[in-house]
Amino acid sequence: MKRLYLLLLLVLPLSCHRSTEKPFVLKEVIEVAGRQGVATDGTYYYVSGSTALYQYDLSGRLVASNEEPFEGMNGPVNHIGDIDVHDGEIYVGCEYFMDGKGENIQVAVYDAKTLRYVRAIPWEPASGQVECCGLAVDAARGHVWMADWVDGHALYCYDLKTSAYLGRTELTPVPALQQGICVVEGKMLISCDDGDAEKDEADRLYVCELYDSAGHLREKAETELFREMTDFRRTGEIEGLTYDEDRKELTVLSNRGARIILGMPRGFYEGYDREIHELYVYSK
Ligand SMILES: [Ca+2]
Ligand SMILES: [Ca+2]
Image (cartoon, rainbow, N blue to C red; front, side, top):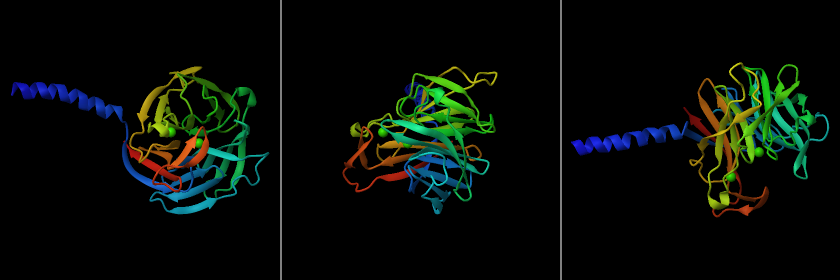
């Protein structure tokens, strides 16, 4: 009896520790057409490809698509990253990506019903941001944040109403190869393609607090590991993510099957003849 008690004492703290290590439990996986980003308004998923927008119902049925999303936009644009949705509009991180950096970076805003371009929040080049891999709307604070894949040392904040550039928050340590950001219960989650699929390493999510207790933007925010994505079907390329506050569901887009070395496609892994894009839906 004493031995059993001792054994329980040893095992219980370990199992508790394990459950706190993996916030969110995988609920379902939905294949989609886009390889970049995801957002949800609780009724639909909006998915971005590098040059397309898609709308799916929550069961994964394609409802609408826009494969000419740059129509009517100011200046040249050739790349879409991670996206968000707020108040009937899709917020899309766009840029003209060439020679390892972004130009004409902007938050392009689309009508969530028609997937048509409406307006844009232009980037402030003096901010130091050189690429836009994704963005997140913080509806509670009236802000939209942009992230940078090339130089991820800061996140960049804009006012949702006035489009004014409000400032940036430095990240320490700097999460490498950022792909998407989203607000989860007031904190910012950052998805990073920092696991090498060649070595079967899982990609990761990090978390940070961008505001101080008075609600002001922090100059510096500490980043912490939030989750290792060891439950993806194969290691690959993590992309954007989104959080549904009502359903307490976190959804992460990931690509698998294609061999991508230093950003360049190099064929496929064994058993694959195409790249598969999937939404991993996690509940709390
Ligand atoms: Ca991306
Ligand atoms: Ca990876």
